Amino acid sequence: MAEVKIYTTRYCPYCHAATALFGEKRVPFEEIDVTGDHVARADLAQRTGRQTVPQVFIDGESIGGYDELAALDRSGRLDELLQGG
Image: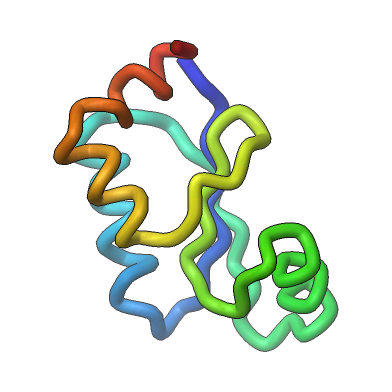
């Protein structure tokens, strides 16, 4: 199983949707709450080129936010990535 990390904030509905999706799939993930942590948010923006959350990483690779995650799921590619493919 792939390693999944999700950078979130407490007040973000898309963050909740992303974590719920992995919960439904029974995929373990590490959630990193960056609420109010300006240094972590700046680091995340530098790494991904994006200011928004959630930011999802699978095996260390940024796949984007919830829209990209949902698109991967609809296409079936998310399951492949989660299996290490």
